[in-house]
Length: 459
Ligand code: XLS
Ligand code: CA
Ligand code: CA
Image 1 (tube, rainbow, N blue to C red):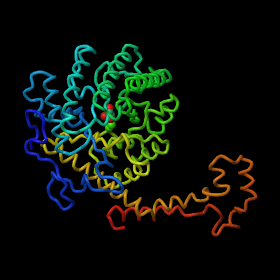
Image 2: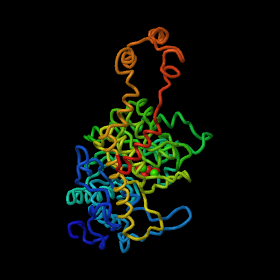
Image 3: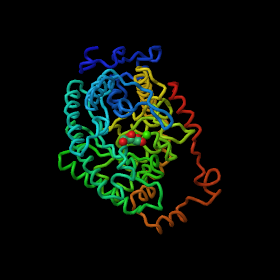
Image 4: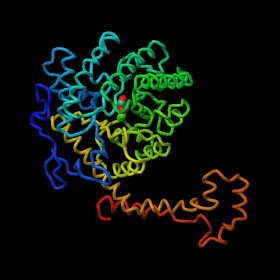
């Protein structure tokens, strides 16, 4: 497969480019639903879904967890004489993987790509050596950068936070890292830059000045935005909400919280939300709730595609497999106009006992198929129109007359109250057909049954 790897060594030698073989295929290394060039509505599947691979889980994680050591023996680290050599090999493996899988994008943290040096200057030098290589590999393969970010949570210096750290020196070191990661993202033509507030939160209010920390976070993001724009960054900034873990409380708690924060700091023109399914679950929300909340504010941007485990409340970052969830998500995304700069980034990791090199491919294939199926179901929902027509009809009393005036803000409370008393809407049980106005079925079960027919293609 000489066209699928550009380094000297092939890291996945027994795996060929993954092809679409359809739902009846028994081949675990083939797509069952994701047919990249298939037209769905007005776009090809690949342009709707804009899949990205997460560098960190796929090429950096070693299978260790709090109870046990590494289980993955990555072929790209074996035999490397220095951390920089290992990082170069890892990048060859990553681009071979992207190409064989057939994704258009990837996402990375600075420290995924290059090892930390002995000083900020050395760390930056390491990063830019790898950025130069990534640039060549992007050109050779056509794979693009969806977004870049800085890892402001792994190093012990960030144990009390980065932009919200109680020590100024740590905030300054975080700035050095963010500045370099923004430069790297610009150099690689990144379409976005993400802030996930790794440890921007608190473990105890007894030792925390909450107001100061939140002010510092806002100030830091304004500075980062201004710097990136000055350097010519045209992409989108994202905040990725998460309610907890690793801190007890993260300031970017959920979509609604982040929307308020962005507006408060005047960041809502430059920032959008990157919604992660597992984080929604940790916040006690459905994935689709977070997507619709972001979209309703005009701030939907991108997605970290994964799933949690509803039984344990951890950030397990498993690959998405539920067609119900992906259908609801794609319906929300299509209603919001689809992706522009964003995409579906698989922020997901294989389990630590998935040690066969093919497992990484199979996991991504499953996730891509789940979203392709979700896209088709969402397209049926929209194309057939029954559900959306019901919703439109449900609010139709606001389309004309006084209802429309209310929507446009053309009524005072006195006027609205007068319509209530004199407008002929009746009292309970008198003018309404049944038990009075407002006693109208929400038809939830009926709509759920329609959805299930779309799910199975039996509409
Ligand atoms: C961790 C986050 C992280 C961000 C990128 O929970 O999901 O991986 O997506 O820093
Ligand atoms: Ca994430
Ligand atoms: Ca996560």
